[in-house]
Length: 218
Image (cartoon, rainbow, N blue to C red; front, side, top):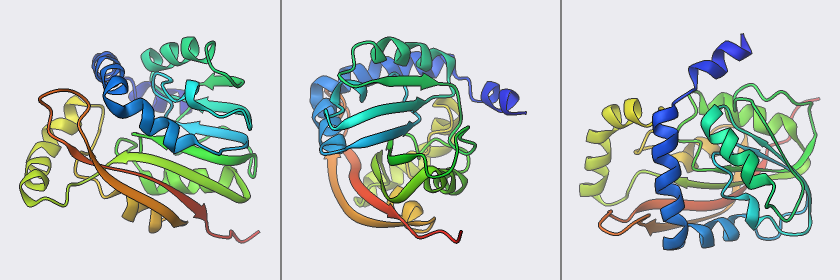
């Protein structure tokens, strides 16, 4: 069943497009955002939806290991290559956000980077992330979100159905901070800013922040 679900998450054409766009975005400020996202992390980290592994070079030396979970075969192969250049130990495995193949309380921190807009069931994915975090752990998130500017928000709303079909399920008008706060986490910091990944692309809203999981009944 899990293997069939992972096969349903294969989007090789979009994976190639995403790789080209994300690599270009790195030079336009994306790399600085990733470094900001990961600054100060320590201990064992799970990265959910690791994509092509662009975060890996930004993990600080206090991180003892990273387990990177990525369902898409094309992106995961690129992540495996990126892991070889990482300054900390990185293991890349196949898996999906809403069924993490890992025990409870296994990680000090979790990272999502431009992924919660795409997972089919973000509430279930956040429950899984909370489950694998140790008490006192944290979630670091970097996501694009619905604009507060009416014209851009309307554009996102109009584009959302077609974009989701073309872009592996990505919802450009997602209010990710609200979803995190409504599903087992308390947001402790959240910075909102506009970002354009390339010339001639509008500056859409992004957020970077930290959240703590609510105490679970044992």
